[in-house]
Image (cartoon, rainbow, N blue to C red; front, side, top):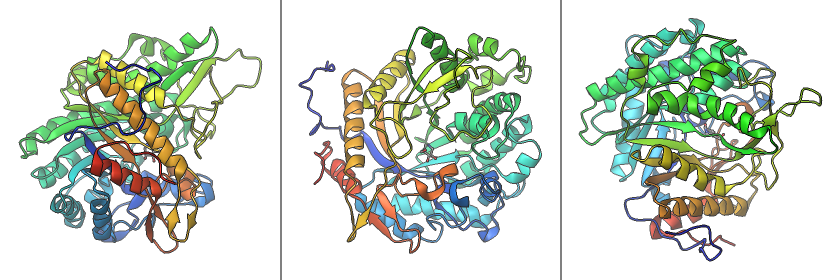
Length: 477
Ligand code: IFM
């Protein structure tokens, strides 16, 4: 067993041939073509078109124009040697209003994408929901309403039926915490609502949607070795003083266990119900829901970026709210608004997120201790930096260092016995970073938003070398 000793080499470490290496994107962040081929409006179209919601009023109308450039983007993936590509499907390209007959053009776009991946030997990992709810469903109440989970299951069945002979991995939801608590609690994400109750109801109906969608997928998918999963973003928490254990417990309940509890243990944590009892009695959880949500999955998708340091607010000084997301007035922490988020020590990425690879190792080890039989895949990890392109090159040494240190952490976790099966870097391309618009660049590949030209950054070359050699390379000069 390898522990944290100083002689643990941090480069040249090898990953076995069956450890999946790839990259990820999401539909609204890259596709553009927002009104093409019958696509309906999603909550992110509405949100980004509303004044003041995104930096510089940026929208996903054009984004990386991936919808029109899918073939050359596929070639780019091949050039980097990706073994897997995780993409999301825009619900509104399939069902513009969120229910009813599917659009052939939408299904055909994703069918061509999947075929293009398979032709190039790249494993397709499809996410059904990466935050772009059809606006018409939001107008009927959105995720706080149970019916949205039923509509989501119908959509899952349509997509599973169309692509289920070829897609290798199905992920129901990406980061339901963000969809519920930023979308309906803090208001920093679409649809921009700020209601404690709506956020908690949304969390449950996203969990329910996952369970119902899984049932549908298992029914219609014909690829015999298809795998099923969900991706969560974990809050890796640190303490500061003797009030921190209570603050950590509260944020862990809302940020992590409100999903792992029902999904993997079949129940909501008692302390979560107690912390939120002044907001709701949780009677929207109906008999049978927890059985529906608690179904076997083949692996858990883990998204990791940074840590947060928390303590209870003393009620006297100004409250610190640096929880890693744009502060827009509402709270992402219903029932626990009296927790303070402290500024993180550097080094920081361009998002202001601290760089803490050791926390990734800790997280993976603790998840594998809590769920010993459940394989894990890092479905997102990466960093935004203020890249500069000079004469066709992007020397993004900071991103290379970030990735090298996080891959090392993943390697260490495996050496400590964690059943970690793969690692997908966020993101393949620079893209629309939600309320931050195009101001933050996460890509292995730079996108010039004027010309749509793609330039592989040094981090992309570094990652290509990792995939080819299966060893973590030194940084590049
Ligand atoms: O860009 C996002 C992605 O859509 C979801 N996970 C975090 C990324 C970086 O913020």
